[in-house]
Image 1 (spheres, rainbow, N blue to C red):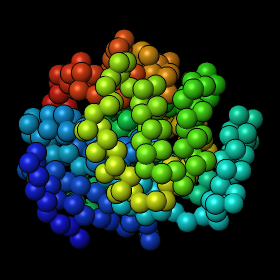
Image 2 (image 1 turned 180 degrees about the vertical axis):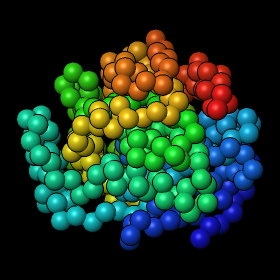
Image 3 (image 1 turned 45 degrees about the vertical axis):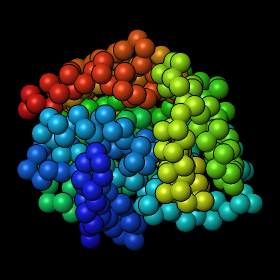
Length: 317
């Protein structure tokens, strides 16, 4: 099922697929005769959170961006779990972090492998045999599994601000970022203004230094994201559990033969830059780009730093 939309920026087709009884909502920007590129979002990210400057750049260069809401975000299905009742939600997340730091097994409601399968089913639904693949942050972790398990479906792989290992004390979030993530996980009933204030705090830590977040555009986009997702914000916690429960992907990543471009910020406080060097070492057919002023997001000034290298990477195949 799909519906066509038109905006002042671009037209797109929106639809959904099912993985068993889990609905995944996607957006296909077209055009149909351009080269398809599947973009996989990070923790809590929705399909509307891909910046216009990224989508427009791809369209202008004859690519067909396809974006989607991961399970537990946006308009895609929420995964019900008795672990996440209001009464024990905070306890569940706290216990998850304790088990994670002591390297004990974590019983997550689903895995990153399940999310990788969601991704590939979108290509099946759109009758796309091969596509370029780009993943950021958690989306990069999901995309690593896609590139490893479905190598015949992937033309090129781009990995941005991501990790090949489960985040740990040496390669994971800084203390300040981890504290804010825990606040989001443990406070599902925050008001819109509280959520926006929290988002600003996170963006100030992980985004471009001195970015102006006191704008109508930022506020409107934040409200749109909140309204689109509804009041149930528990999916963020379940996605976080999927990351922390992820089995070591190193052997899978070693098997990736697809031409890969790895992009990372030297000052990334969420996923430290040593993760990029490790990925570059593991993926034989990969190139590494490190940018001193880049943190974890791809704001327009950051995207301008590497967009030409990205284009060369995508066009070389």
